[in-house]
Image 1: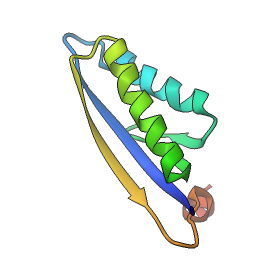
Image 2: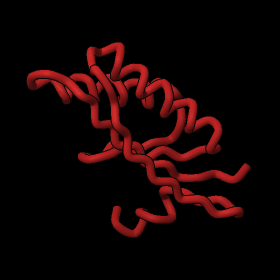
Image 3: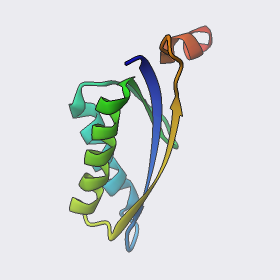
Length: 95
């Protein structure tokens, strides 16, 4: 399968002010997955095979629940082309 870009924004349902602490757990899952990624202020973008990235998404959501969230809504964006797509081709001119 071609390389895709998948952006994930987790929106955990938590009481109090610990939203960032829960989101940090999702980001840790992504970091430990070994997939290429860029953490942004509103979402994290990953690069890899779609099946692999879906597994990371599921684990990130589970991590939010384990961190105390009552539920998690996620916003997912996928950029797919049969020949593949990279983050570098999109942002290299801005770096």
